[in-house]
Length: 134
Image (cartoon, one colour):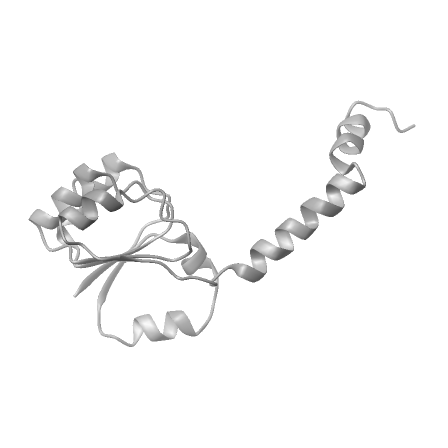
């Protein structure tokens, strides 16, 4: 099986998920996502499966993939809004995601934004940049 790996989160986060994927004997090609439709169209038919991030899986990309070897798409993350799920269903290409894979990061980010908002850090940053702090 030939796998296209485009999820930068997957690529940049060391862990057992790398060991598991690499132990399967797959041929794995890596691109840094998010990958645009025009990049995917000429190559997608060469892959049996994709582990993606926020790439553009439009109906055209999915159709081209189905005409080739594409059998499966897995989103390393939660949101599937960049994948045309109606087209995937019509073409019988299963699409899955990874619920909970980034829940700690999202919680940390939300907490940091709440602190930043409460302390007006964004306003103070702009003010300091303009020389208000002598």
